[in-house]
Image (cartoon, rainbow, N blue to C red):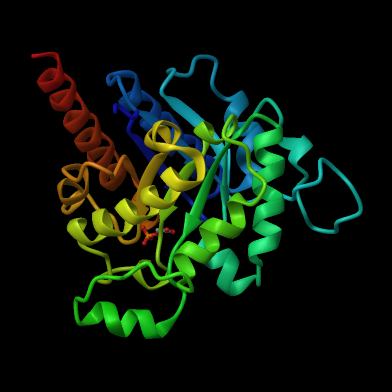
Length: 274
Ligand code: PGA
């Protein structure tokens, strides 16, 4: 089944507005030359209105999103951004990033509420799931594959987030396998390893929503992705793209990732046509 590849740039709490505008402009010029993929930029929310307005023309493959959101449209929630406030600006919403889970104490249930609200607003959630514990890091360090047992972080997070979600809306969902310990340099997970984890996630999605619907949900990987290693992920059949943090902050490091994903998708389409 063909799933449109996607590259997500998570700028986290970085960039000035000027830097964000310059970076977005360069990325836009790159995306304009390419087709068959989605590039999603997640700037700091405070820059979002200016960034969106600075584009008179935006290529159809370039999208904006937010790194976090409150599930209510508005309300008495000091310091939060309401889901109703990003209307018309953001198409994608990152949810359950390991930094939010680990540093800000976001629970499975709060992430479930956000996911339901984002789907209700007809936006696309990018749901991050992944191991948070050091035990898993040590296991991974020895190169053993993760088995997706019932009590594992990954499956628990996925199950909890999808509670009550209907098959009808789920096709807009993107799932990102993003283990906390793989963020930052030198800890990335190998391509075959990610493939094995995602296969198991897809198996669960198949049981939950049926194989056809599960086959339409895009699944991506995040954690220390750079242009040097991108091919290792694009060749895997179940990895539909990547979530990039550090390497998404400079056009020199981000554009080659976008180009590599687009090129791979192009070859795949050619192959399928013949
Ligand atoms: P990184 O971040 O690319 O800097 O490791 C990825 C992420 O935040 O998931």
